[in-house]
Length: 90
Image (cartoon, rainbow, N blue to C red; front, side, top):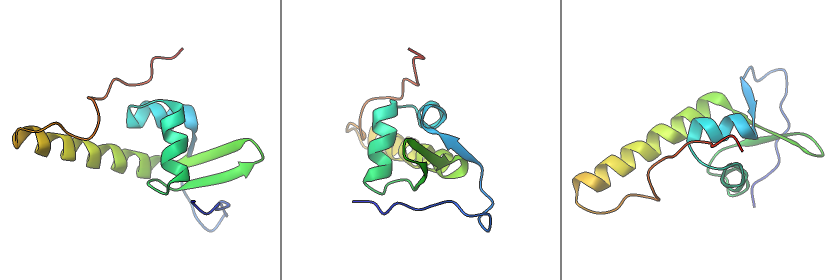
């Protein structure tokens, strides 16, 4: 399980909440929480019910997944998961 990391002033980062991370990555909020718990993206615990994610890390994760999907399509196989739909804003 991923280690909980507290944000410190020594680490200047642009932190975003789960909803914004879901929009950037192109998945649901529960998937973002799962990515954080499994260590695929780093998460920061701000409070008992507040989890934040680094904006640049979310963009980098999306870029990696898009590249992996494009490579898989080029090779004639299905990529990791379905194509990105984005957050529906329910």
